[in-house]
Image (cartoon, rainbow, N blue to C red; front, side, top):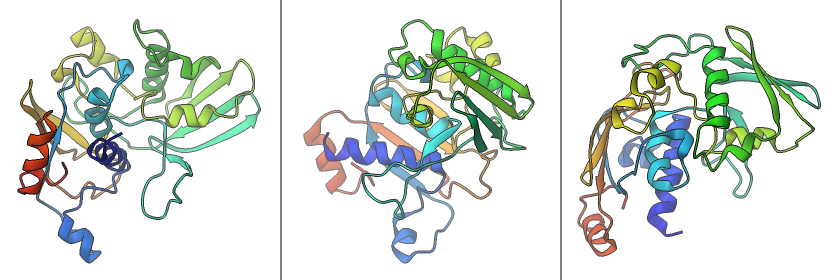
Length: 260
């Protein structure tokens, strides 16, 4: 994995955590400041369906726009080589027995203010729908991640229960995997038929996809409905498609990209 790809994947994970993308000068001083634009180079995604993600080309933008139930914690306080799990849309979870996991969703967490969901509250039914689609959508090479699941149910508006076929110690890690179940809305699939087009990118993550110009780039703007108040710090992220190594290195060295 080259350094730029590693940096981008790390950046994506931190963006989802809502703790990244403060301006470089603010990070150096230790006091985050709001505003500004982050520029970086990327690859053009073949599509935007988060449940058909097998490569970083699609994975990178999805980490900016979508959330999962849980995620692997990132940041300077995490020991390298460890993968602690923390809540994303799940505020807490419990394991009553070896086959059952119960997740409590964050009260008041909302979708991005884009049609057709228009910023409505996220519910347990959204999670159930997302899990079932991830398990059954045609072409999902990652469906095996949830092969241990027997059923998933909405206990109430903010509670989701998973029942496993057999004990599986890595279940939480599977849910936290960035290639696993991004939470999506049924209305979006109903409207667009699939999630491959840029217009269908409607999630719960810290960033909203504003524009996508094939083979040119993408722009993201701060999600005002993000569940962590005040985050992210930066106003915009501009991703330029630049797949030539010599070009992207020259652009990075000249200051065109903050991350190359």
